[in-house]
Amino acid sequence: MYNRWRFKKGNENLEIEVKGNRTADDSDAVRYWAISGHGICYRSWLDVAEDVMAGRLEVLCSDWLGEEVPLNIICADRRQLSPKIRLLKDHLQERFRSYCFSLGKKQH
Image 1 (tube, rainbow, N blue to C red):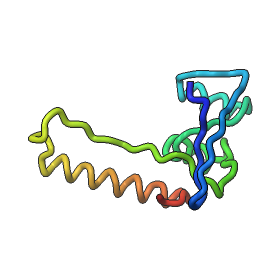
Image 2 (cartoon, rainbow, N blue to C red):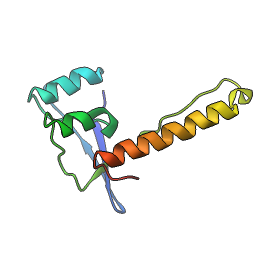
Image 3 (cartoon, rainbow, N blue to C red):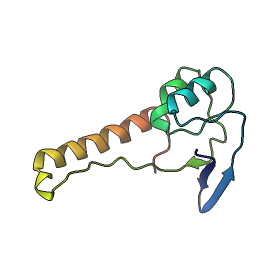
């Protein structure tokens, strides 16, 4: 289970060990519990942005940033890194960047 939450503000790093009466390795279950008022969750902005914007969830400690979680494109062989795959990578980077920015999330 993911019981260590990491945060960053400027040059300051903070790690907190969390405990609760519920645990899950299913992020949808954790989201449902949080929306239902059964606690707080630590999720990526892409996972919760729509819930925050719709008022179903609130951001706590908004001056702190959570961990960055990279999105990777994995190819079995370098030859698969075709110009089309590189364009896809660039397109996804820009879409995620603009999506996060449009929802009010600070960019890293």
